[in-house]
Length: 334
Image 1 (cartoon, rainbow, N blue to C red):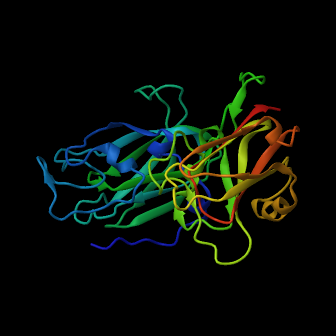
Image 2 (spheres, helix red, strand yellow):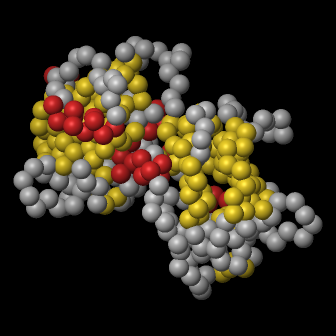
Image 3 (cartoon, rainbow, N blue to C red):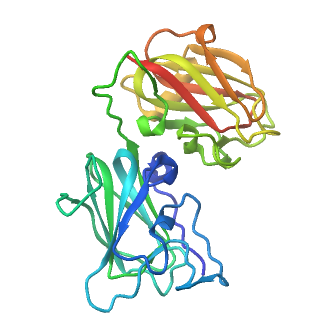
């Protein structure tokens, strides 16, 4: 029951999963979920399969699976995204669904401040596409509209192991108090990772998510460095601001936390993600090297922060290598 995994397209490598529960996404409604709960379809971990596991309704499947339809029609599931965002692409994953996968699927989206109802206007962003057994199905999305919800249609019924909706959160700063301190790096607020030199372990994008890490795999961790130098990661903030406080959390990293860290920052305009990597080598220091400890939130503010002008990009340097669970950049909007 092998799963076919093609090479990840660029939208899946460079964007985050807006349908991730870690971001706050929820499966709100499904026409049917007799065989498998709709919430499983959004799980962050890859789908798994246990040939000996059954429940009261039959074979336990790691995903969303509807009953066999006998009277026409088709099934669908409505998902609230973790943050309003521009969708760059999707992965409709049928891993381990072999004789029970849907032959086709389509995707609609809407923008709504509340849960969709019968009066909600939906826009088709992915016309019906064919699905195969136990495979990832990647499709790019051509839409620059920020969406809040998606509706996955499957034809006519069956099971989907995972739905990944790759994109970029779009924050709404309108009406926000500019004298208040905001978490500018938070993924829900539009913070995103531009580049890093290594991310051998963990789930790098969770560095910018809510809460503390759930385990050592929930964060950014590099391999053991066997040569001179240090590791780094670059974050584009969700808004331009003056930095007031920084938190570097090494939660769960005990024998593999970095010995020290430092920060650089800049206000970047008219640059590509690739050119920023080169520019960042010459950015001014936001914070000099600071000692880190295991499994701890390190908070830096006041005289520790050297830049007092607005910035929109931050580079975290760790010495020489190791793992960081969360990076939080707090500041006032410029």
